[in-house]
Length: 340
Ligand code: NAD
Ligand code: UDP
Image (tube, rainbow, N blue to C red; front, side):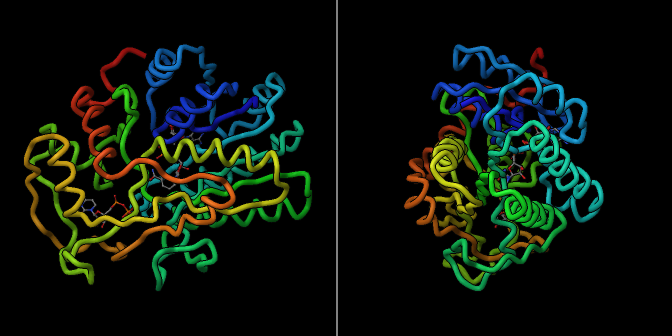
């Protein structure tokens, strides 16, 4: 398939581009590089042995999108481009709605104008808010609790409306749980700017000596060891979920919603122990108070993706930590400092 990948220089997008190219799909990446390095493009090219067309373009730039779509003969768009920091979204809600919602509308308008009507959307488990029960199935009510989560829920609603008005659209909404790990080659991985918000990038930076110690946000949750539990999904498993979604779109009209998660939960302390085993170093930590907005427990019921997309996660937490350590230990400062 001939695909356009927005945000394809970012963390999940870049891993998905590798899987798309390896499976023989054609790919053009657009990204405004607001949270990515251009150096990821040659890294992907050398891993896959294929050229990767890249255009620096913002999804809110309608003229730029028109030029790309007019030249491409695209059959589907995979839409990763978004701002994703929950805390920042609370401080800058308009920037988040502008980028994530208005940007997606601009992209959908451009696609419609060029007759491209297959769309895979990066949604998030954050749309569920703080559900009463785990595991979380797709029928769990949507209850977004942050501006970021509301941008995801808002775009989901827009996609249902677009399809209702024009049933030619085929849309796959993928609600990701916690994307973690790195490509097994060690050449591509997450490259957070500033202090990482998320657990595994922070732990990896402690292990490599960039941070002194981990702050564990609360050990008084109603969980077996008192720390929060999440569903950690290897980014390569997540990337492969998009290939399954594209196959599903080819066979199935309409709008579909699928969780992408492992169906297993791990506590913060379990993650720390697994990472210590992978890197052979101690991870110093101290327990501090809970982080506002955190839920105690979140993990997916992934059975709908298993049954309909024929997708299940293959990699466990030990493999996640081993692959992340390979990337972090060989690229302690990520892509920065590398030539573009
Ligand atoms: P990322 O920041 O690494 O990738 C997003 C990419 O989009 C970046 O390269 C950024 O430069 C680009 N971008 C942002 N705004 C843009 C714009 N206006 N125009 C063009 N490019 C733009 O993030 P990621 O972790 O790879 O996340 C990818 C998608 O998955 C996002 O939509 C995110 O909300 C969603 N998601 C991520 C997670 C996770 O655990 N990382 C979980 C749930 C959902
Ligand atoms: N966490 C932590 N210290 C950190 C970052 C995260 O203890 O520096 C905890 C957090 O409270 C949660 C889990 O690790 O229980 C996963 O947090 P992350 O931010 O990675 O994912 P999210 O909370 O968005 O699911």
